[in-house]
Length: 461
Length: 119
Image (tube, rainbow over all chains, first blue to last red; front, side, top):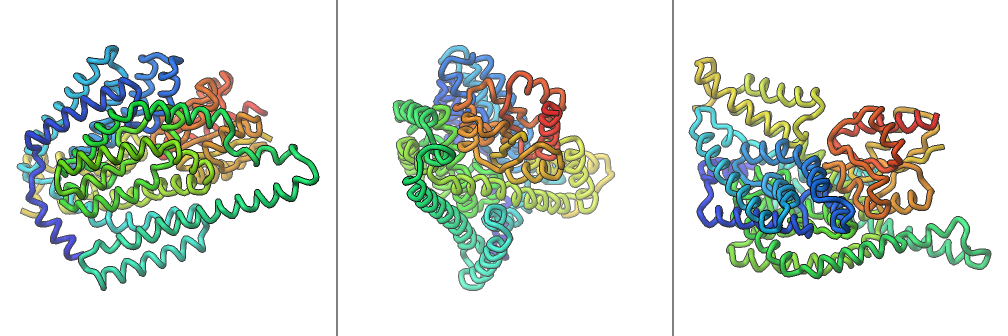
């Protein structure tokens, strides 16, 4: 705990201004992702991906698909990506890749897509650098206050496997998992003070959840086989027929056509993987919902852990949407994020990113088949993602209020908490996850205005 | 009995939410996208409500591919009115996706529209 706080203090000074090499990387990568989206090879928005099938098959027009893409992405660009980036000074995929999804699909000609994508990248760099410079010079520095966020995120995120286990496998197993995780956190703090205390607990939690799910599916399959063997002598067909063929032909043929389409474009996916991994390696980009705060704080190992476990919640979603649509994800299974954060050199990141994407695309068909046989494991991933949202929601809300307290004491809490509640009352204009950081941002600006009007004195000089 | 399947990230919450409404004539089962796609296709279920962050990815995913865009609709993160849903039901939509942070607002609207249609 004390090491974490010390880390936060020492990292408080470091600047997130992008170097020239980083700026070029962002522009080129945005150009590439827009091109890939134009070619309907991959989109970042998991919700848009299913709609790509009709587009690829020529059943829906470029304009209609653009409308879907914009409709599903706008809230996340302005309600998640932008406030997150402005409040942390770190780039995120919602801000970079959702717009390039839209711009790529929108482009009527292939050559226009990379131009629009690159231009978007340039706009972001310019805007974020400017905003960062201004923010750090203000009397009430909300970017530094935002670093309060990392402790609640790291510690509450530790519990997400427990929430998932409870929801999927009931109170008893959930309670046991909770006790085991807590014990592991305490033991880790005592025995290995240098390790993030939640790391072993999270690992054990995720493995336990997947273990429960696999065991359940195995039992189910055995039971079905026994039932089938028992039913065989009497009669065939009837009610049991649907149990025998859990994944039937239309789905299988859809999946294999999509996998084949993606395999044909393996080289461009390898370039994409290299690019995303390189961006993560530069430590100016946070892939997950919580990671931006950790990257801003300079805690790359923590960021890598959080995003590594997050991957397990996303593999089935990304695999099934990709196999059902024939379009892959811009960040793949997002394994490139944690690998990128940890790699020491950009060259290694390029190689690793390309290799990871190659493996992912080639394994897609196989992953789809395995997942088809493991319904509980797919279930687990949905519970995991839900648990991630729940734990991060509380952590980010609490962290935002801590930041508000650092910025402006009671008045800060009133403004930030008030804005959060107002957003709730208005039907969540801003995505829940980003509402509190966005409130800190607005609160920070407001407190600076009040200071300028001589109505407020910053808590700490 | 109208058979409604729930799926996606907030599948349990949607089922809970609908259960609490206590609307008669609805049978609500927690399912998954792949299973639901097959059941709807075989006529073993009537409607599917899917949820995820966007309201379309995990919630519609496979269903859109297997059942086609004619039966699927996403509200995204928008909260529909009962009239919106009734209109969509009239046009043959059976699969609905919506944002998981709008479950409390959207799920009951859809369920009421479905129940009203069957009444």
